[in-house]
Amino acid sequence: MPQKIKASVAYGIGKGFAQPEEIIIDDPIGAEVLVDVKASGLCHSDLHLVEDDDKFFPFPAVIGHEVAGVVEAVGPEVSGIKVGDHVVASLEQVCGHCANCLKGQPQSCTQQQECVRGEGEKPRLSFPDGRPITQAFGTGGFAEKALIHENQLAVVNNQVKWDEAACIGCATITGAGAAINTAHVRPGDTVAVIGTGGIGLNIISGASICGAKRIIAIDVFDNKLEFARKFGATDVINSKNEDPVAKVCELTDGGVDEAFEAIGLQSTMKQAWDMLGVGGTAFPIGLAKPDATISLEINPADLLVHQRGFKGVWMGSTNIKHDIPMYADLAVDGRLNMHDIVSQHIKLSQIDEAYKQLVKGEVIRSVITDFD
Picture 1 (cartoon, one colour):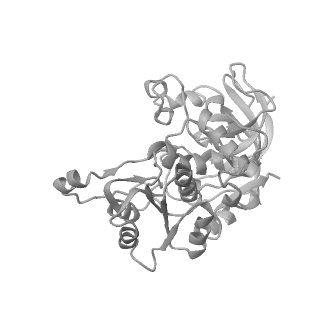
Picture 2: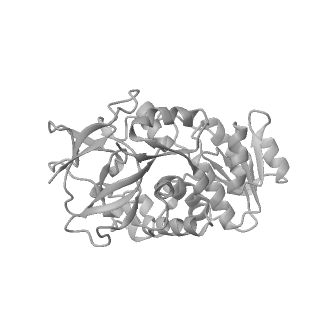
Picture 3: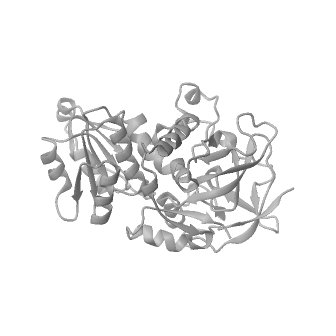
């Protein structure tokens, strides 16, 4: 039977997140899994979607994609997940059989629509009067329960804490994955990370795990920069006080092997390019505003000589079925710092307030653990 649950609904651009209200969640069908949500993280990308960008999905919608919880029920086609499992969700939608999935690039799946209900099917979420509600990215984590395709879920060990597990589903796979899977940071590499929020700190963690000898954190908040040292940053630069490009080049004798941009601004993407050394690659990760563009003035001869690259990253090139359980194990073993990612636990009713704190640089990650 469909259930009544509490959720925070986003009604449109600039309207923020509504106070919890009662909506209806359907029973699982096909390969869907009903998850009793224990923790849901507040990623900056979700704020971007309700403030700036209405191109990803229609409103009203239940947003939230950092989800961890217990499996309550499964659809008849689910094969790899059972009731009682501890699971972490990802907004990465994977069909499992397209050409990209088969060649080991599930983050580039071309048949993502298979992870959501199709036209003519009953919506997963609806208002009590029957009006449909979009379940953003197939997760809809700002709610007591979520109905998610099994291909968007990974089973994790039951020792990992719920709040940390939720953050693994986006902040960690995107950040650490960018360093480990996309950039293939090698022992002895030099790395710069622009932006030390949840994604940036996980990039630093990933680069540290890979054995980078120098990891330079760049931000405009001194408190966040000092915090970055807990994750493996060897040097910090406040870009309000000094030119980050010049300082990075000074510290590394000409530039870094990998520069990661975790903010989504044209200016900082350009900085990532400018601070590269010979053979270096810049990796833009931050979600930019919908009308943003970036221009790089490149001398082709200089490009050839310096062998630089500029490569976009989507979800840390992650295979969620493999990587999420691995990160959970690393967190439990203490080899991946997830404890310090979580700044505070909040109620479902406090989303707007917590996002204001995030924008001010007062918190790294707020995690909903109280859904009343």
